[in-house]
Length: 116
Image (tube, rainbow, N blue to C red):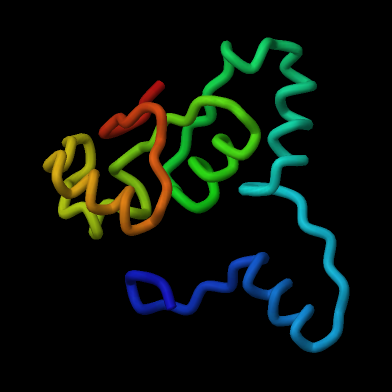
């Protein structure tokens, strides 16, 4: 169930359910390392020049860390309510630390919003 009360079907959850029924799945995409490795290879840059930007600790930050690249966590995304923040504003540092500890994921950088 999503934060707005709607039902969301995440591919990973569907795959795990299918596996529990005896099915076999191949995982690709965030947070799995092969997804990040493909992107890194296509960019043709050294890892120390790459940062993955995203709002999910479990998909973006965890995947970037597992692939050995920096991560930029956007606080105005899916974790906004947990942080008690509004779009475009940084939450209290204590709220960030508590969330990172609870989720066992710590990004290398944190921004309130990503805008081009």
